[in-house]
Amino acid sequence: MKTITKLLFVSATLLVFSACKNETKTEGDGSAIESSATTSASTQKQGQAFIENDESKPNVLQIAIGSPVHTTLVAAVQAAELENALVNAGPLMVFAPTNAAFDALPAGTVEELLKPVNKEKLAYILKNHVTPGNYSKDFLKKFKKLGQASNENIAVEVIGDDVFVGGAKIVASIPAGNGIVHVVDKVILPAN
Image 1 (cartoon, rainbow, N blue to C red):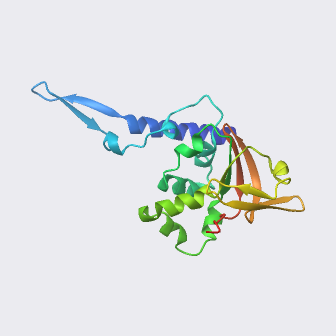
Image 2 (cartoon, rainbow, N blue to C red; image 1 turned 30 degrees about the vertical axis):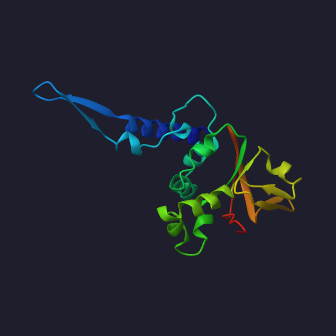
Image 3 (cartoon, one colour; image 1 turned 135 degrees about the horizontal axis):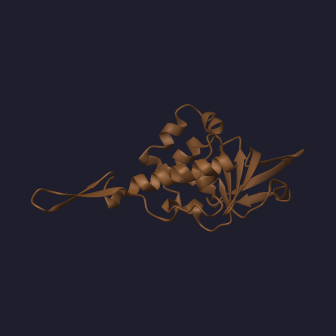
């Protein structure tokens, strides 16, 4: 966990510093010219998700960013522009499908969803993986359904010691500063 946290903070630091790098140069006539390593301020990402914080416990978004098995999830969150929603105070439970879970979808599905024209559809699917609360896997065994941020209810099923949420098996759980990340083996698709 410490390695993931360190990698997360190094990545976040590099991102912040590269996004903020501006230089002012002086022309021969004394006038100032400003050059930027990034696009204009109007196209830069803004909000709480993009503020560097190396003192707090990582939030659910930072945990996903630091995980090598959640790169597809992170790309989807970024394409849907949901970063700021995942860093709020919460508490949030995020059911985080692995890259293998996304790979199990029909061929071309992920690529199609990542297109800008499908941003709202992608956001809806991702919201189906988030619910308010901070419940352990064992505590979730007491539930029959969970209300998701997508306004859908998904079933909770217990088989032996395994917990399934919306048909996805919880394979690991990682506490976060604003909730918990439950790693799941399947993408939880909305009923609608």
